[in-house]
Image 1 (tube, rainbow, N blue to C red):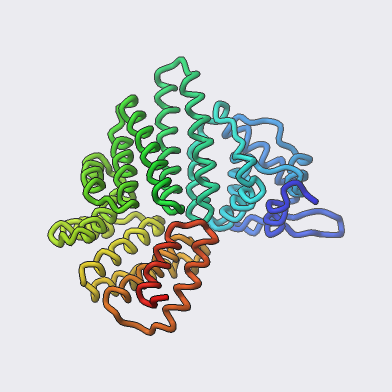
Image 2: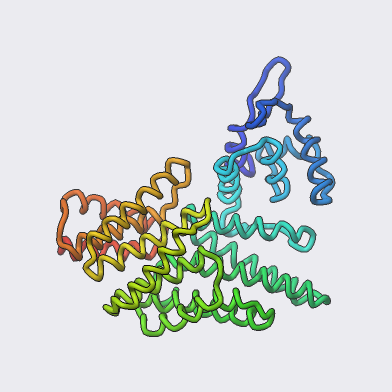
Length: 391
């Protein structure tokens, strides 16, 4: 059995076996140009050396990867995908195969000291692991990366290098907090997230980075929101808004504030957050549909809680349309899909309408799937289902 069977299987989609002569042919998706394993290996070697200063890649190394005896490094994966002009979804399939082979206990295995440009790619990969439904692995990976970057920051003699590694560590901690958010056990979760927010705040102060301070307050506010302490969450979230600039982060904070004010029955402040959230969404960057779905889910539930059922159904429909387009393009995100099911249940519970047999089957299936991913939302869906259909 290959050492890395998932990667070996995923790579089979990208080559064709020929018997006469016996060889593997890889095809560039843009030009339809075919190249042998040996030819592609030499092209990868040249690109790796030219762009990253990495030497040593050769046809035998590539053959071992294809056979599942070795795996791609991040730079090698970049080179492979670029030379074959692979689409994002095709690259993602290879990344997930590598993640499956790695498993949690085996870590992510990259030495950032020799390839600092690879940090951003690795953090992006961990974020995608979380989005695709493996939040525990993402938490583990982000934690490992944060600890590694802390080691390099402590060992740096240059203030510039130390600042760089600390800022990247802050990004890793934010990804960790983001991955923690959908997991089970709210009490323990809030403890972990508050500790992560405190670390983020410390880095923001040391590096004097307002954006990181904003993220720290956003995480802190989310932690208190999760344990339903809206009165404590709201000041942190409002403080976060003063520092954040990224539309994705702003949308998340406005969405969480809208939910918080709706729980308090504060329609005036809810209306203000709804207007701001819609303004952010109108200027939404392309390719960021995942966070848009999260914002629409929260807005749906907030509207429903305040009795704005027509608005809630329209918002839910908008979110489902966006998610359907994502799923059609191969980007199925379990957490977002389940959140929309939960939002639909909330409207039905609050408005006391709908085909109950249909929604009960859907709720039961959503609870099962959420538990498979260890998502905290499984308990929320079960609670709403039980309110609609008392045991």
